[in-house]
Amino acid sequence: MAAAATSASTSTAVTAPTNPDTQITNLKKDIQKLSDELRSKNDLLNSLLDLAHQQSMHIASLKAAVEDTVHWDPDTSPRPSSSSTPKPLWSEVVCVTPTPACSPAATGLLTSAARSRGRGDPPGSFVMGTSMVRHVRVNGSRTFCHPGAFVRDITNSAHQLSLRNPSTHTIIVHAGVNDLKFQQSETLKKDFITLIHSIKQLDKQCIISGPLPSPRFGDIKFSRLRQLHIWLKGHCLSNNIPYVDNFTTFFNRPNLFKPDGIHPNQTGSQLLSMNIELTLRSAKLLSD
Image 1 (tube, rainbow, N blue to C red):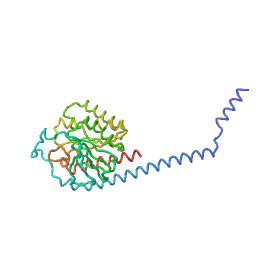
Image 2 (cartoon, one colour):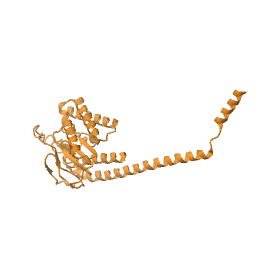
Image 3 (cartoon, one colour):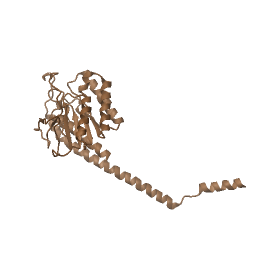
C-alpha cells in the first residue's frame, strides 16, 4: 500500500503541468535575449558592409593607376647590389597628412610619420617593418622602417617603441623576407613566435602583415616565401591574431613593384597600406 501511494505521488509530480504564466515569462525572456543578439550581430554586419564599401571605392580609385603602371621587365632592369642596402637605425617618414611628396627624415633614433594625426598626438598603432613599409601610411598610425631588419630586430625595437609610447594599443609587423636567406625555416618560425609573444607580453594587440611575393625571387626563394606565408596565416588563425594576406593581393602582379622587382612602388605601397588598414579596422570592430 505504501509503495503504491509513493508511486502515485511520484507520477503526479512528474505529470503535473507547468504554470502557464511561468512558461510565458520564460519564453518572453528567451525572445528578448535572441532579439538583443540579433540586433548586435546586425549592427556588426552593417559596420563591416560599410567598411567593405569604403575599401571597394578605394580599390576602384587605384584601378586606373594599376593599369597605367609600366610592367617590370627582369631582362632590362639591373639587379640590386647585395651591399646596396645598409642596415641603419630605425627611421620614420615625417608626414602629418598623407602626401606623395613627403620624404624620409631622421630626427635621432626615432622620427615620426603620422597620417591624419597631429604631430603631438600619440599614435593608436605602429606599423613596423623592413624597407617594404617605407611608404606605408595608415590612419591613426606611425610607420617605422628598418631596412635590412630581421625578425629578431623587430622584436627588440617593438619593446623599445612600446616603452616610449605606452598609450599605443596595436603593433603591426611586416618582416621575415630578409630572414629567408639563412634557409632556416624552423628558426624563423621560432623567431616569429617569440615576436608575437613579446608583443602580447607588452599588453598590445599584434597584427602580422604577410610577405609580398616578389617577382624577382627564383623558384627556391619563392617557395620558401610561400611556405612562410602559409605557416604565418595558419599560426595567426589558430592563435586569434589578425593576419594581413598580402600574398593573394600581390601574387603575379609585377606592376605593383619598383624596377628592382622587390619593393612595392607607389601604387603597391598604397595597396599594402589599404590591406593593413582594412585588417586593423576589422580587428577593432570585432573586438569592440
